Image 1 (cartoon, rainbow, N blue to C red):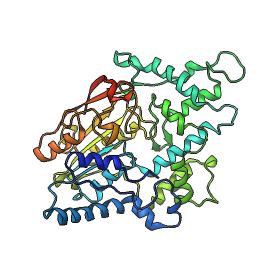
Image 2: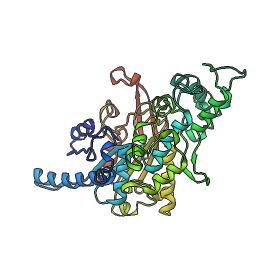
Image 3: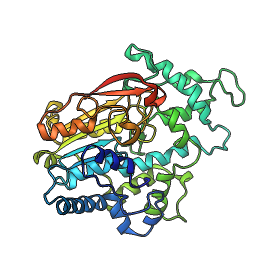
Image 4: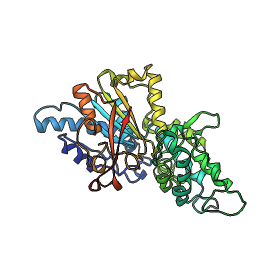
Length: 400
């Protein structure tokens, strides 16, 4: 349920003098089929593979270099972000510094939230299905019209999605008729409204927060495509249920309750405290793009607030071990119209920016762990057409 070992991240680490290790979580990451009736593979996926790989790599490093490592760092996004936070929770001694981006937290409910989109959009052959061209054009343009300028600057970026209370009714067709390319039917307006609404159980308790407006350009390609989102569909098909008993089109909040109650191999990853990690001096940087198309950025905000309550700490006290950076205009882990390049991964996410604490989040973490100096902001970069050779489009500070 993730591509596997990320070789660009291994190269990124070694390029800057780290002994780097990657793991595929013990299975072929292109499918959940290997998890079916195979609890060992689910355990590896949930927590064991990362922990065992970390312990083994530390032993190999000591044997190869004839001395132990000095500090251990974790860098991951999406499922990797979940792994990092889970490690801080259940193995607080594994890493000294953890960078967790767009984390797949509250994992069971995340999968339910993503499966639910198919029941909202309907099949891509249904009469009121909204094609991706409409999401990317008509709907996205209206989202920007209503919300882009809320920060006083019209730049194609929604600065704070919390302030965007999108009203899809503005796109309602004024005349009865068939499907149009320049307005939405009542059924389509309802679909859009549900997409941008939180997911609740029948008793009114929250399952998962809403998708943030602005993400529809990329979300239309997978989550709103009129077919079940494959990662989440396979999780239910092979881990929660069986292939013969699962039908994504019949999904309800009851299935979400079943999945979270089962919580395979304790994969949920929704701690209310990271006190053990903090007490041993661990440092954690969270980041999330405000235009994430696969995991709502509102969920990381919810997690941060959960830690504040669970650890009985003020934001200032949390700053001692945790910094949370919101990245306006960034998609899932990277890309988007915002200043999304700040060293959060290998490849394009680190290309063209120097390895220093002001411009690179990994360098910022190293300085925090090894010199005790944290950063309040990171300067992100957006290159023209996301091409370093074409030069800088703009830069922007992202503050905690």
